[in-house]
Image (cartoon, rainbow, N blue to C red; front, side, top):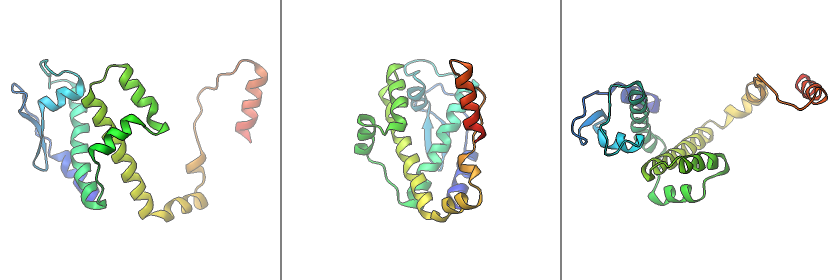
Length: 176
């Protein structure tokens, strides 16, 4: 699929560089530069010297490279677009599944750039997943029929309860 190929090419496009100048590219994906200034804004290090020789920076940069490859591929493959109004709406009224994420970012003092970037990514994620499901609608039905355990199975390590009676009730429900 074109999206997978684009992801692989995007990941291979990593061009690591030292970053004395904040406008200098630390990576390039499909001709699009990812600058040290942009990375500093995402990592909350704006105005500080950005150390590109750390594992944390490499991991953050890897994520940016993937997104830089995924977004244009999703635009081309699915015709998806995300507007500034979409992002503002997501921040103002995030779906329930993202409310904790946005509350945590706000509580931790994340910059507006970080919040907007994460809002945009949640929108992309939702739109791409919806499109993939729409295109392969038979997958879910066949999984429910052929391998329902893939949708319902889970691993439990600990269940905290107040007493032995609740523990036995939880064990009985799991065994059922």
